[in-house]
Length: 330
Ligand code: GCU
Image (cartoon, rainbow, N blue to C red; front, side, top):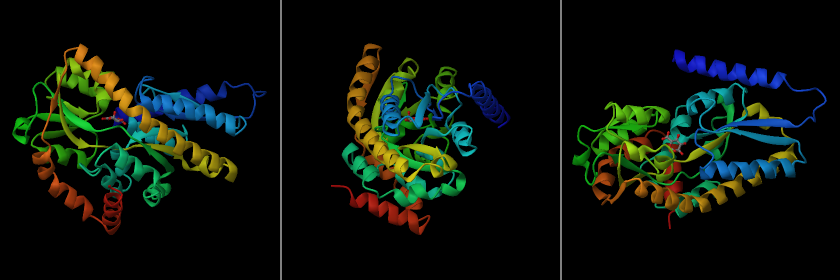
């Protein structure tokens, strides 16, 4: 906690000092600083870059976007705090981070809730999540929309084809209770941790592996420490694009419409780019000795049913949301 507070404080200081260095005769363009925890190769980075260029153009230079990749401003939890406090204006954070502000978010990150990318895309652009996204306004930020991050799968030092293969295996999960319980139900030991610590933790035997999509698996070279990637397909966790409340509220109505339309367009493009990036990542992983294992998902699906049910039953809104998402399945 102390390290996190220190890191947040230092990032804040760094940003403030950076701002005060501006010359007063510079154009009055509003700078949107966005924290991103992945590299410049990530499809979301590319989509965000295009989004920034379009936003600048369409708002006639009133808004410019500056992306800080590679978790330079801290992990996703720290980035969320910076957005809440208005030290930065935007961030992309995985759904479990926002779940800590409103438990109903757990529904859109439930195991096996989406059938495939098409279904997820339909959910993200249909407006079905608008109420949920608006629900965290009181916490200091808006959720503008959701990117896909494909499907998540288990990787470790051996193939995982059935729940018993995970017995006693500590598998890193994102920092949420639902994620921990999920791996426990799947047969392993869910171990919450920041993404940046996973490589060393596996190397040192603190963990046996992790769970993620192919793109991040390769970006972070996790194939070096966990060469078997098994297609349990247990999750398709949304990555949420968040913006500081005041930044959003201060936008003119016209700019809000521009922002909204561009976000939608960006999300669409990122969905299209995702599959290509997965193929490219797999190629690199294989060249570096990784093995991809097909898995029959039924036993895992059965195992996580009690978790699904408890999240659905946790509130009336959760139930409505779950039904709305499943109704969009073809
Ligand atoms: C994915 C996701 C990130 C998240 C990461 C993680 O890469 O896109 O937003 O931070 O998983 O497991 O922490």
